[in-house]
Image (tube, rainbow, N blue to C red; front, side):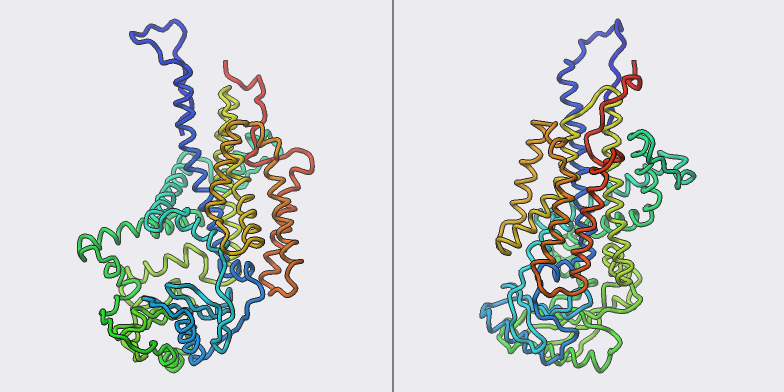
Length: 507
């Protein structure tokens, strides 16, 4: 984002009258606002991405009290499929079974008509209703835009983050030499600069990995759409076949429910070392139906290997993600590397911490730019207020969305409510810039986090250890976030910068 241009020297001759100062200032403000918007969207994607690492744990936390099982038999899975399809009594092209995992030890059957939790015997328990978790995930994947365009847009944000990382390193020749130089008690602008640069160095490998893989996932959609148009007459499923398997031959004649139990029994006999995570049935209830069993491979970055079966449960072949072409294996490895789901809880916790650190880098970078503008005598109080609303107001509204879902039910309009409230809060901050400082959104967010952790724990009698840890993390995070506001002034990220020292203003 450009700094304001230096005005011409008094008395300089010019054949053209200078543009009106008011117009120039409005143009510069508009240019800066566009940059602020891009940084704000990137911040939202990174914040929700840090949470998405624990998406299964969050679903479990959001919906406590659901029957949990460590493992299920092939017969129970078959019964769950048949019972769900009979209960819904509507045609569906797809049926999915989420097998119990460490993060979500629940059996879930999903069709085009809805999703249900089932117990260890395959009997119906309750509809799946993790609306808030889905709200967080779709913000990270698509920014709540239509999926095809949304994932490409977030991919572009990944490219922007890659560019910012490279140019940030090139713009600071001493950045690695000063990697551990922190002056947190210095002037606010210097302290923020040190925090921004040090975090940038420490998190460079992580930030580079998630930015690159995010760009690949997002813009890969554009690549596959192009391949589909050029080679397969617009058939996107055929273009994706090397990664997800080919679509079965269409045969609409009715048939009994596909024999997933036989496919799972085959997996137990031939690959007992691999844990099955998903079962997918395509062209459900027709003679053309096909079963795909996704199995996790330990100590591999691939998201899994797909084993394909016909409708009777007879093995056809495996897709080859584990031992096929190198490009195929590399493409299948992007997802785990991006979401940090490849080495258990330690890596997931590291991804959470690194993700929040990346949010701090984005926050301090833009805050530092706003402080420099103010120190040069060209403050932008509206942009400062809008940035404070983004950094503290957006997560505050995410917490509010959780309580809207908890108190009003899974049918509440979380997405529309969030963006409407965010727009209103931003408009209010732009109209009255001093309001963001007076409201102290950071302290409000801290209180909301602590209250959510305590409230969730007290409202639920029995919780698994993972959900209790989320409650503890929320409460502790709220306390830590509030500490700088409750003691002597220190570094306060994304608050409106203080008035400049008159001696530091040029001229």
